[in-house]
Image 1 (cartoon, rainbow, N blue to C red):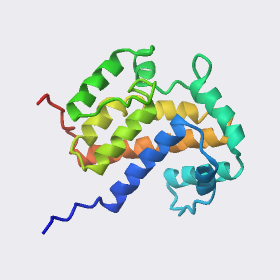
Image 2 (image 1 turned 180 degrees about the horizontal axis):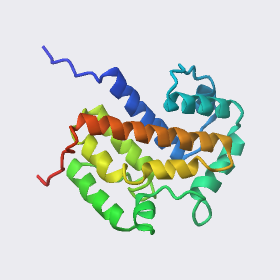
Image 3 (image 1 turned 180 degrees about the vertical axis):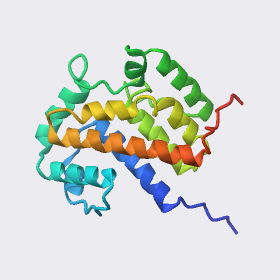
Image 4 (image 1 turned 135 degrees about the vertical axis):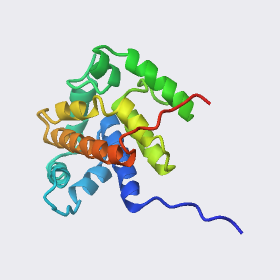
Length: 204
């Protein structure tokens, strides 16, 4: 007889999926399949900012094409030297890349057992990578979610997404607005879940 694996609550599973979607769209432009899926999203309008942002993303996806988004992704988030938005914690928190925020992040990732993928050239403090870590923490129902978010996302992620929300490509502006709203909702949720006292990661 085997023990049944615990299943994530529906709300937490959705949170993890949203983090993964944000990470995917920050790392690379959507392919035709993902763009079509986004365009066909049926959004329940409940009057919340999140619902409005999802609707805006769906509308923008419906009016976009993959070739145009490839160029826009490079211009907004990559660039020859850097994009219009620089999605790294150390840039937003320290004013330079590869600074103190990245060092602190690497220490916590080591404690949590995360290793940098050999397939990526981006430093670990890229916003997409942090969203991926949050998705994995939710997947395993880790008690460290609140601490990790408060230390490595809360101080800057909403601002970065808000800056993306100001770009001149409707799809990426909608993505930025959605990300900003989601970060704000996560901060409120995790603050409550943690009882206002984030769990601190300790060396084993």
